[in-house]
Image 1 (tube, one colour):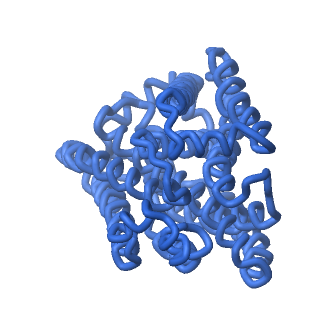
Image 2 (cartoon, one colour):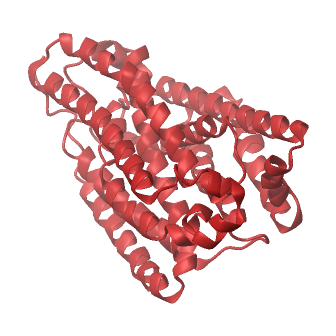
Length: 392
């Protein structure tokens, strides 16, 4: 089978891309102004926005690697969406610059006075040397880029040559790539989020953080498939069985998020160690308590109950409502993890909204640009006929 034009991206993706860029600029202007008016708030808001959109790109990379390892129609039908999202990972190396420059406003280990006053930070000072911190970040982004570039390159060659050996090559890259993603994401979670608290530590945190990324990406993919399924050439290609698969995955990862969240909470609370329970006490007591209850109900209880319905999972529009809810709640979860480290009482700023809009608009603009470069399905993959037959 030769490369076909029958699955070329729809023309109105150009309009979506333009609108995304406009939204990004609209968010960027007040965000830049906020960087001068309130630098501390800017860096704190920017960190959450950065981690949220990075999670979509890296979660897509994780799902892509998982698909190549396991196969199946579910992954083949969304592979190009995952590849396009994963290929945006290098831009986050640039977007990381404000996080690095604002480290003094974010991390206790970057404040000399706090380091001098804390024996814990003093003990860990070697790990938190600025060159080492920056070097680790560079290594993380290099790994993310390398894995996404290899998988995407082999996929492009498959379109061009129909070489059946490329399936095995992508699988060969996906195994070590998934492991590399897991390790680097874990350390990135320690460096960029857990270190906001100078004493707190959880061995489950890296897995919890990575699972949240996958959930963000899956919710985003469902929203993109909703957009594509109503337009040629994908109209009629995505079928209820495909969305049922995505709904089941969304339910599974929602349950996994809840399991990891409860496991971490129970282990830390039963241990009753001051340096550990303080992290939770600051989030389930006082003005953050209501925010925590909202997170539990809208991130787990409501999606869990709704996703139990097989009919809902087969209906892309209804499934997309749940995906939209979870997509928003992923930002809420990251905010819940980060903000109490800065604000003992509940606090939100307009910069939280504008920075998320700015990075998101620019990222979606880049993502759509990547999606436009290739057919929406891997037309020369030997499993494609089976995946399309799965639709009928």
